[in-house]
Image 1 (tube, rainbow, N blue to C red):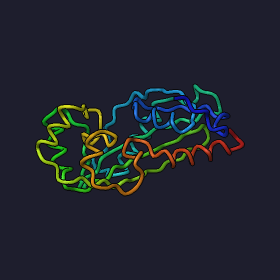
Image 2: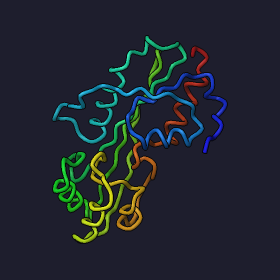
Image 3: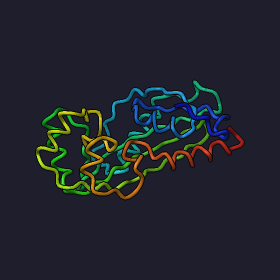
Length: 203
């Protein structure tokens, strides 16, 4: 379904620098017209970084991989990076089924944080922020984890799960904070930041 764009944003040339279908969908549903450019980056980061510092560092790598000078002056580039943070360590995307099963066993019965860093960049200034959501999983048994991995493919997702899928409906006992942030984009905060750019007379 096509939604009309939010009028204030029509003056901006908005670019989503992301290959994520979920970020694309969330931004589309927010009344924002944009084009997609896929950043070409190696997402390595210094090992001393923790939590939101990792996400913000990777956002900057993504933003720096796109030359904003190649675009019109009213261009605004959005980059985002989502990480799963459990007991002081980053949980990555699973390498294979066994890895995904190990990750879900770690998340089972625990609270983890999903942190999305966002960098929104125009030619003259940028806005960066990170949004955290706490996610509480019930204790999951082997049957539940196997069922999820047999029927869904969470291999492109940090933490080996998609909150909008079966596992989110049946195994998450509660969340504190933004739901869409867990999917990879804190839409409310992105919307508010874009309004600031749209109201900037220099753009």
